[in-house]
Length: 435
Image 1 (cartoon, helix red, strand yellow):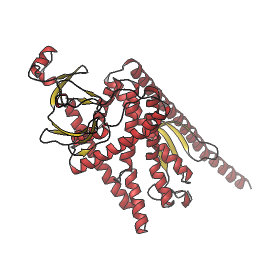
Image 2 (cartoon, one colour):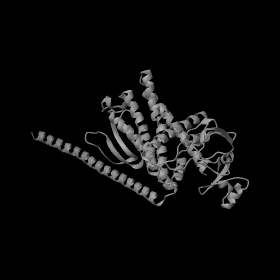
Image 3 (cartoon, helix red, strand yellow):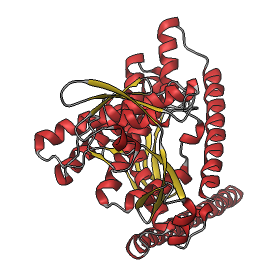
Image 4 (spheres, one colour):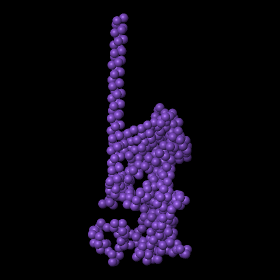
């Protein structure tokens, strides 16, 4: 009897001893998690303070431009991921996490009856929506009908295009707001100003004329004209088809002249005003001068205001930018526009720098432009983009068979590598242009 009691007591002691480390481990794990959370909070607070300091005290500097660019991209990526999130939830896909920012988790919460973890992460760069089964079933604990890959083709398509849709909606709202507050200029390809002593002035082009074609390319807006002007031109001759105010259509063949930009001022180069004399006058080296080709015409500058005109402008400008981007992509493929016309992160930094000089309206316009850019690029049927994933849904609908998830994964991985290589090349070109 005593032996049995001793054995029982021994088992109880062993059981208690075996429990003790587990309790200590749990406590230690909780303490470590608190330390990690505190550390991540401090990182986030330090980043936010640094951003505020840069925005307030270092405007116009390299740091200010980089911070503004990162904030814009973060907002646009978060909006894009928000579109995926909302449609995924609507279609019954399990979303494990929806996060603002990247990197270590700072804090998060779950709503009652909602399994999704809503997180704030330490690095304020973009965000993400983590959906179950984006390519294949990846969690044995979830019902099969909560995986994205098991949803209908229509539902998967809606989830994939939702991010692009949110980017487009954001751009339209921004364009409307810009026009409502600051007004907008005429978007159609009317000539608003002709600079004296330029080829256009000498040829007889006047204010109010409308450009119908440029080098054989039909144009209806100034955006169209900008794209057409960026196309390769071997003979340095620009042919404009102009509709005069009396309805007469006239064709002009013009040869551009050089113009130097110094402190925002354009100075025409001619026999009496050579590059050397301009450099000497402004105490600069000839090699440091920014020289561009000009014809001498520019768009109208009169501001148009009002709610209805702002709505019209938002949709008209949106359509014009989309058309411009598609035209650029097509001409890149055909070789009419070189890769040097593209901008990477470094080139975008210089664009932010230029936009910032002209006020908040230009910053917001750049944000709208980038939002449309993000949407158009993502919907392209290219690997790693939403359009590339949508392409596989379409292939599945045509063949009536599921594509092997591994093949699709390889396809997107290769596409991602190609995109990174292109970005590196473009960035390298941007850096060379800055030097």
